[in-house]
Length: 498
Image (cartoon, helix red, strand yellow):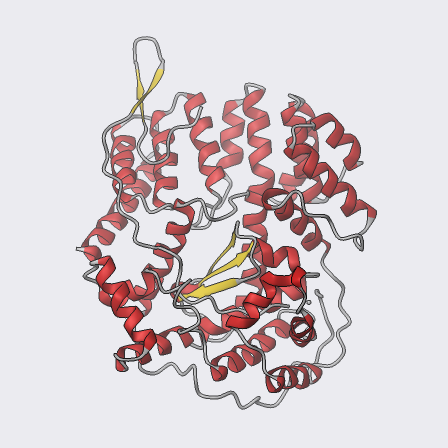
């Protein structure tokens, strides 16, 4: 049984060892992060390790994204990114599957290591939204809609849109739009900014601009200009190629976008209305992509598995492309059967045996757990966790299998190896909470709930939960210091807001 992450508290009866749930009246912190600022986007194509000519002359990028005259400090930008990400998670807008979460982060990290001006951290997530879009904001937050992933045809295509969004951040295009809106108070965009500020009653005016209703209604008025879009194409293309993806993905997809004009692609046509393509932009990107030479890499098959996982989680009724291999077709069918509760049939359809493929192994392990075949899960996943220690996707079903067999301590040891970060799947904290409860360790259970609360912006609840965790026995000195640091961090957030 899981606690409510916002306000439930564990209470242990020392006489009989039972644990009950207390529900104090906590006033939930108001979240003022409504639809996020500035959908930028673009869209994409193929992948992997290429033999490319990356020693090119300077591409003479326009001086749009200069680093002078920062409108908001790097520290505040990072804080803003966390507020946006946590707001999305609080509203349940993001996919929290450990496997999808880890995949999109890994893909994003591969790109940002090749990006310029990456002083601030980046955060990558997949939204449950089925529209074909993506957006980037201050603080390095890049969100990819599930609909975009389902419309893409390869990892390079997806990576192209992500690199384009990363370029908008590194070239500081969003800051320039905000600065221009502040200078021109009579512009449509500036008027929308003023209205947003008045609505939020936020004393941090510069921060509020990024927090409120500028996305949906103001998107057309505040969309990136042609110069910024061209620069994002050029910088994004260099990031894409340097990271080992197919540079032809970017111009190829731009060309495909121009052909989408029938009623079956209304979602893409809406995007094109907000992000018009010019012949010059397509031609320029095509020319620049050719300079990188012939791509000789191969597609990463993990993309195909993850696309089907996203489909099962958000649009199970949509068909899997007929062009994929029989193995991927079987995997996709098994995922959909799992969603319907037909676990035994899903195992048969999947045709998965002893596999070292993480996506296949995780699916089969989840099916074993659903059928209470916990020992089979251990046999399947223990060899993989030795190769990939701390892997979130493997850890979740493995810990659950150990706990179900009564080996609670081993379940906790497996969970402890996960390197917890801001983007760790919320599901991991829920599992940690449950395992700690089974161990009879209320302190660690409270901490798990608090960590989840922090990542959904529920700071008052998290503070109460952490203080309770610190008071109870069960945590080591190191763990107590970590919790004190969490409390100090939340106190800093309070000071900023006050």
